[in-house]
Image (tube, rainbow, N blue to C red; front, side, top):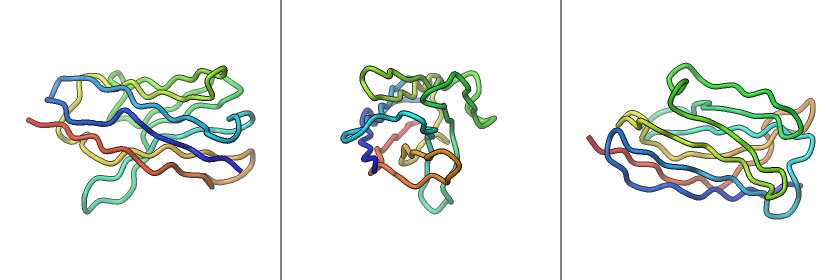
Length: 118
């Protein structure tokens, strides 16, 4: 079982930057895919980015390509989401999630609020 803790959210003006972190508190991310999702008020949860913990493949939704970067630090059991050129439409609660091999995203963090003002 994996427990995830997100941090790094906050309030920022449009055009600013934030870096979110997702840390495994009980076990490593070995053999997992880690994804970032977000949910704005009144909206459905949306996929943002993902990375394979033991590999190098990454994937981004079109709306964040060129602005967001997902990365990992195996030694720290941490996945990062660097968010640059933030827009008001990026405002949401951001969640990290872990998917075991051949499975769905079964483990979720508590979320961290990102608010981008105009």
